[in-house]
Amino acid sequence: MSVNWDLVWSSLGPLIGGAIKGTIPLTLASFVLGLILALIVALMRLSRNVILAAVGRFYVSVIRGTPLLVQLFVIFYGLPTIGIKLDPWPSAIIAFSLNVGGYAAEVIRAAILSVPKGQWEAAHTIGMSRGQALLRIILPQAARVSVPPLSNTFISLVKDTSLASLILVTELFRQAQQVAAFSQEFMALYLEAAAVYWVICLVLSSAQSQLEKRLDRYVAH
Amino acid sequence: MSPTDEAPVLKVRGLTKSFGSNAVLRGIDLDVPKGKVVALIGPSGSGKTTVLRCLNGLEMPDGGTVALGGNGTGELRLDFGGKVSRKEIFALRDRSAMVFQHYNLFPHMTVLQNVTEGPIKVQKRPRTQAVEEAERLLARVGLLEKKDAYPFELSGGQQQRVGIVRALALRPQLLLFDEPTSALDPELVGDVLGVIKELAEEGWTMVIVTHELGFARQMADEVIFMDDGVVVERGPASEVLRQPQQERTQQFLQRLLHDF
Image (cartoon, rainbow over all chains, first blue to last red; front, side):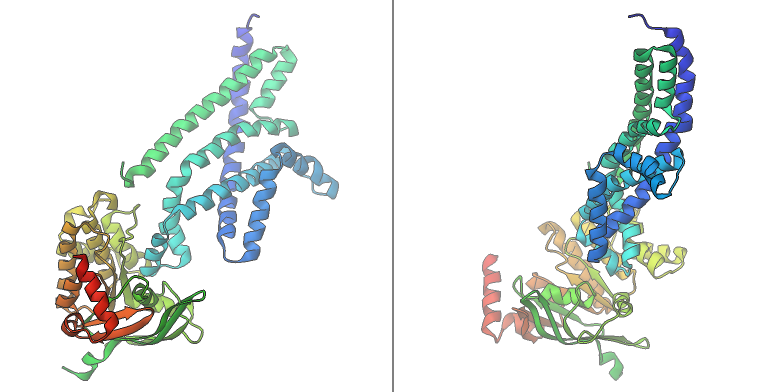
C-alpha cells in the first residue's frame, strides 16, 4: 500500500475546517447546554419532591438506556412525522445536549452527595438559604470532584459528534467521508480523520490537567 | 444591674424531638441569662447535641418553644407546636451561631473568606468593614498571619479557632458550641479552651456541649446533666459536678472519672 501524501496534505484543510466549523462548535454548544440540563436534572433527582425526583430518574434511564444514534434519528427523522421539522444542526445540538444531560446528571448528583453534610450545616449556620449554600459552598466543592468524570463525558462527546455526519451536518468526519468517496483513499482519509480527533482530545486532556491542578489548590497532597 | 440584664437571653420550654419512633428530646427546659455560660453534659445519645442543633434550626423540634431576646432588639419566639416559617428559622440563625465538633470550615475558601462569607454574603455588611472586623478577631486568636491560608494548611486547633471566629463575626446574641474540643489532639485542646474562656469572661452568652468536665467546672455558670432526652439534674457547676444529687449523674461522673 502506498500512501497518497499529496491527498493527505491537501485534505487536511477541509478536515480541520470541518473540525472548526462543525465538530468543535457542536461539541461546545451541546456540552454547555447539556451541563445546564444535567445540573437541573441532578437537583431534581436530589429533590425531596417525589414527582420531580421520579421525572429526573426516568429521563436519566431513557437517555442511558438507548443508543445515541437512535436518539439522533428520532429527533431528525422521527419528529418530522409528527410535524416537528428541525434542521440538521439544531437536531444534532438537541440530541447531544439531551445525551450529555443524562450522563452528566449522574456525575453531578454524585459529586453533590460527596460533599459532607457538615458543609450544608455550616452554610445554614451562617444564615445561608439552600440556594446560596448550593451555589457558594456545595457546587464549588462538587466541581472539583466532577472534573475528571465530566472531562470523560466531554471527550466522548467530541468523538460522538461524528454521528452527526449521518444527519448531514458538515463536520470533521463528513468532510473525510466526502474526500474519501471522491478519491477512493479510504484508509488514508479515515486515519487522517482519526488523527485530527486525537489531537483535539490531547488538547482537551491537557486542559483537564490544568483545571484539576487549579481546583486542587485547597486540598492536602 | 437592671432587671432586663438578668432576663434570659435564651428561654426554652418543653422542647421535644423524635427521630422516627425514637424520642430524643422529651421536654427540655433551658434558661440562659445574658452573659452566662451553660454547659450541657451527659452520655452520648442523651440528646444534648440535638438540643444545640434545635437552637440553630439544624433540627426541627416537634414541639416546645424557643425564645431568644436581647436588649433593644425585641424577642424572637418560635413555637414549634405550630407551624414555624422559614423566615423564623432564618431569624433564629441570625441571632445564634454554631461552632462544630469537626469545625466544618469551607475547604475551598481561605481563612479570611471563611470568616467574612456570612457577614458579607448573608448579612450584607460592607466588605471593608467585614474584613477589618474579621482581621481584628483573627488577631485576637493569634491567627492573623494565617488569613490567606486554606483550612487544610492549619492544625485542628487552628481550624477550630477559625470556626470560633467565623461564629463571632456574625455578631450573634448566643454562641453554641458542639463538643468543640473532642476532635482535637490533646495538646491542642488548651488553645481552644483558652479562647472560649476569654469569650466567657468578655460576657458572651454561651451554651456548650462538652465532655471536658474540668473546663465545665471552671467556666460554666450552670451545668445541666442530660440523659435519655430529659434534664436529670441542673445547678451551679460546683454542685452538679462535685455533689450530684441524682444517681444517674453520679454514675455518669464516676464512669468519666474512671476513664482518666
